[in-house]
Length: 122
Image 1 (tube, rainbow, N blue to C red):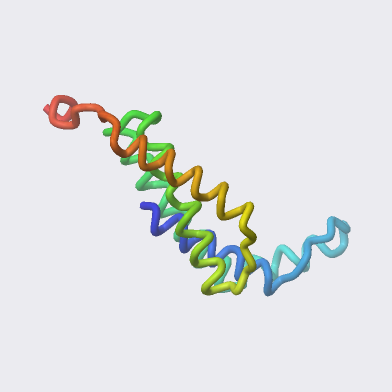
Image 2 (cartoon, rainbow, N blue to C red; image 1 turned 180 degrees about the vertical axis):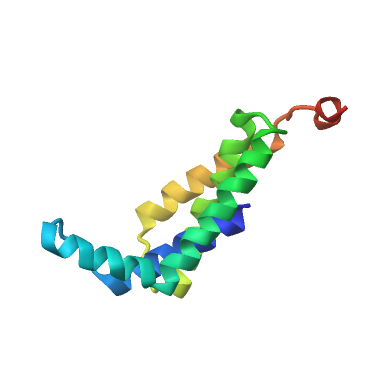
């Protein structure tokens, strides 16, 4: 599930970098909208995000939101690593410190008790 989210975000970013900065000028919106629809990176990104969302709904039927949501926050670390590696983004020390804090929180949540899945499935 997290993989779909991470790669979806990477694809969306790549596609939007190809399109360029959005200006909200009425006559250009249609042109930009068409570019967005036919951009393969954006199409792939939207598909991956949709797969993430469907799996997220499935997971919500089994797990507590207070457990699931922090676990999905692990995408911050993976997205940042891939953004630096694949998109050549520069990530400064302050941002890495924030990502580390989020990752520690994710680890703590992952170590906590979760809802008994077998009782719910019976």
